[in-house]
Image (cartoon, rainbow, N blue to C red):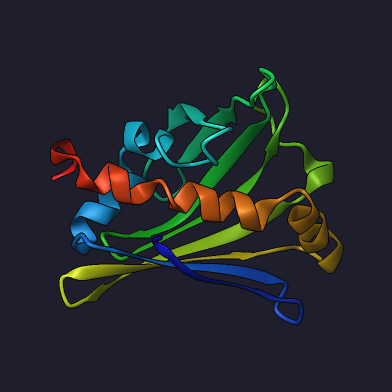
Length: 165
């Protein structure tokens, strides 16, 4: 299993996932940089993602939806705030309506992804900071922790493919 820990910090309004991979930082960076690779793991196996827009640059925007087992399609958006390739990515993340417009009532979180070399392997840390304790609790109740663990659990197989190198 790639996920080595998850933690919630109510004081900092944060949720953190740490995973390690048998691949170098540049290969792991590709699973964030390339939207077709990102689609293969962003979302748990029962909710695969489809990115209809992906501007991988500071200030860029992404629009996506996940297709659930009953055909439901919850939408989301990102606004990329910082990229320090291949070690750091930051973005605001929120829910969207069926047209891709942000749903303000749901709020947004701010995600920071860091990739660290650990002797030829990579440690990936994904930290999400929420606007309020209520928002954080709501996301946990919606299954964010389990969903992130399941999603990250798909990365090893993707990295093992020759096409990623």
